[in-house]
Image (cartoon, rainbow, N blue to C red; front, side, top):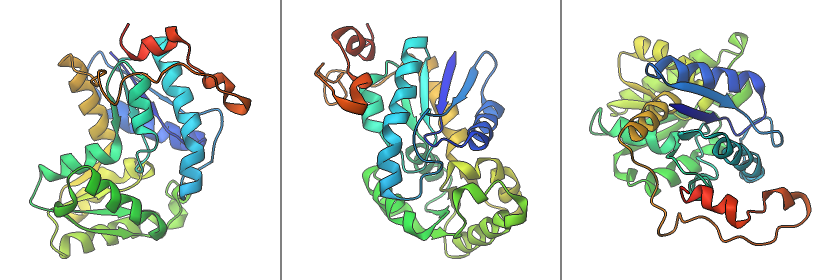
Length: 253
């Protein structure tokens, strides 16, 4: 089985970290390939950056389809481009926020989220509502550490994440969701330190993708997630034009 984990930003060190987190939980016989776009922002911390990350993300989903991957994980907590990716992929496409929310809901009555910057908290609330988890979400707390600072020990990011996770539990949550793919490798140590369940969406999504493939399940293709109709694209997006043959790949042909 091949699972493609796509980091939608273009920072290689973060792609490597996400890949390590995914590979650490993958079962025997599962190959995890962590990739990043050839274009796009170095990190995703605004609506502008999220929008401009989507073409590069879809570039990697299409490449995975051509190479025969079995499932795709979108490793950004905003779940950017998830609907579009599901239209063009044969196998399951799992967003780490959606998976993390549903995983946390199995671990207690309510859960909270700890993310990077306060300006991104609105997206977490929005996704919780979309995924039917709004009533389970106690709060979204920001540690005010930029995404790319998470990997630098001198930044003090880990200590800030631990502090905010403690506050989430103290405020009545049973579990904590880490609201950034860049926090994936902090998960185990943070959980041990706060003494409560901490969910990393990258690991959870990798295992869910693996499970869906083993069950022979994939995204339904007879409704909204049917392949996009072939049509003309121009300018910088001309290479994204889908002819009938490429569209049929997404349909499972």
